[in-house]
Length: 497
Image 1 (tube, rainbow, N blue to C red):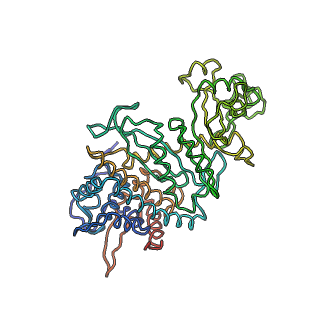
Image 2 (cartoon, rainbow, N blue to C red):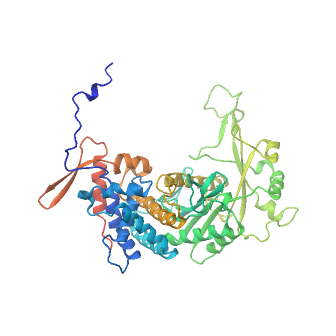
């Protein structure tokens, strides 16, 4: 077999002209301009000094570079080295200075940056609603919850491989412990807080701050009906009290679903729950959680009850905890709070507590304020459970966020890393808007790595004709039509004032 045949007759030279790489970055840059993000950042970071490079333009370009895969500030050269396409772009030292200026201003520049992103978000969401007929719904098993904006809170650990300010040992190693909030409807970050490595998972003050910032980030017309979820690590009395206060506002609806600790009172309630109170749970596609028994008949599609073993169940413990023999054990908690429990067969190798080892079930609990008389599928225990379990989707957002700057803090200084985090969250936001405003099919659901290969890192030829420039993508590139369509979609958006 001739393994070198592909290279026969191939010559590599450096004399090409008009060739640009990472041509797909024009989509993100144009999107930042059209939504008013660049102009808003320019106003937020305006200075009385005479500057060659507008600070807002530099920060917007940095966000585009991070979305393109930049992991360190020197990667900013991906745009600076292609001035024939992007025009005058700041140098890497200028990018460092911009981040240092933001860091040196304390919380004020970050607050102004947040306000600029939120203003652009209002315009972007209006365009999303115009294109799709509404904000994407919240998927719950095989159903979709329409008309509700879902905020998911989650903390994560970003490892540090060198000495960085406030990087500390934690339960996953050494690094920082940021707290993030994502919109489940659009997949974009709404708020984020960079924290010291030893910060607690259930620090109430941090959760309240990020929650308030996330709600403020949601455009006003989409705040009327909210859903907020948080896992058990973030649960606290202060958080649930705050959620209850927000839910009681006239003209507003807020349904929360928060993880709950399995304590002594909950274990007692579980042992008192009758077996027929446990209802079978459903899987991510609405299917019943069950498996074939070892002694099942040969017909795999049979309906024999003995041939199937139920794998997971859900029940409500509120009545046992509030009106049981021990009296009201939830005194001091909101009256609208309901407690649910889920049990499921553990996977091989799972570590069980002594209580769980007694009956072989693994238990997880959560609380919600969903009204007891909620009609339809939403009020069924199986779907109440499914609505809480899909909180795990935020982990995908965090994972892709770490691939988009969140997990790559470039400086020793904590304040400068905070500025980098603001740029990284903006980068993830631009990618979410790109998917919803300009892409279709599988690309509209693609993760950053896929978008970079298929769209952002595409090479093209830049030609000039008269007073116009033409960016020509190879006709053989499979996603060339999608890039052209995306460009037309973005340039058709109304220019923000």
